[in-house]
Length: 255
Image (cartoon, rainbow, N blue to C red; front, side, top):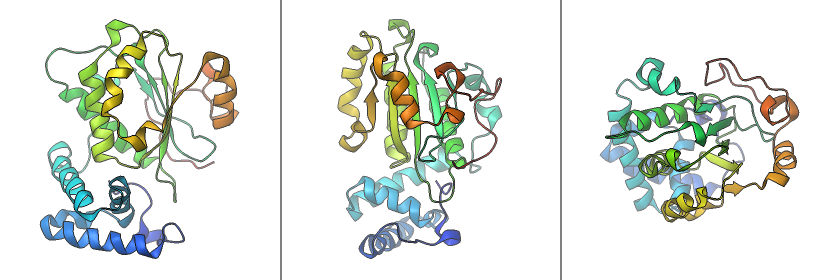
């Protein structure tokens, strides 16, 4: 989680008030007493967990301790290598390039390219964690959130994967709180709404507000309002070329 703004380098600055940072310090004391590995997490990471639980120390500490335990199992070496998710990368379901007008790294997910698998979803869950970690490395100084476009063109019942959706949602909400800025859902077919109604109750209230359904008639204006033409992919009328067979842009760039 120590992949965004590092207060040891940049300081707290004016973001957040003194009372909130005092709560962050209290949270650190509580969590480090139970799990010393919390020392590796910066204050901004702790603040995200604190905000996700409405500044309730008890709830935030439980959430953070769960994250630390998950991280030890999921990333025993501190990261997930490309080789560990090579099969998932090859499916070409997503691209992670460009930035929106707020400087948030953009991800583009293609629902019509995803198909459910039999058995467990361990490979998918590992890839979701890998994708979040990679997105964190693209965050510039002072930026803690990223944004996404979910393109559902061609989505049908064959693509519906409730267990996969819920697994990804749990990872996002439980282990990467306060990371997602906004998610635009585009080219949404009517039949998708049946799946959405099943997923919706599992989304927490703060996260629900970040999902925005975009009507086809508003698509061009919405994307151009959110993303500069130089950062908007060619397929949506912009000038950004996706890198061939490379899901993630190689470096961070703030605009």
